[in-house]
Image (tube, rainbow, N blue to C red; front, top):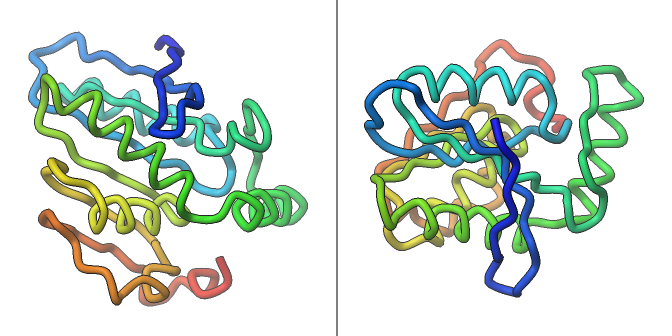
Length: 169
């Protein structure tokens, strides 16, 4: 994969990891990280999407406050990730995701896919972006804070009924 910089709407340089398919391209995905940054798990998911034919972009959402966040799933890292999420807020990362969508939309149908924190950001992008073709949200437990917004594209939400940790993220 490669890492590029693209411009956000406020003229910041967003670092984006690019996963290009080696098979026929069928669309594009903006893959949105959890609170753990662009870690090995998110990179492995991006790799899987690219192998299925999706041009996959993974923006480094936390770049505005800390570069190259790559946390593990330990209690300390969970707390660190939550602090980064709280410090960053929702509006700037949503704007950065929409910038990725706009760049990809020139050549592809584009979907967002996000996990946990990224699941809620995927919802926010679906409610804000014009031209987004679909949005998939996994474990976006904070979507309930944004139900006054309606998606502008088909949106699929996955929640774990028996996942005890879903409500504290």
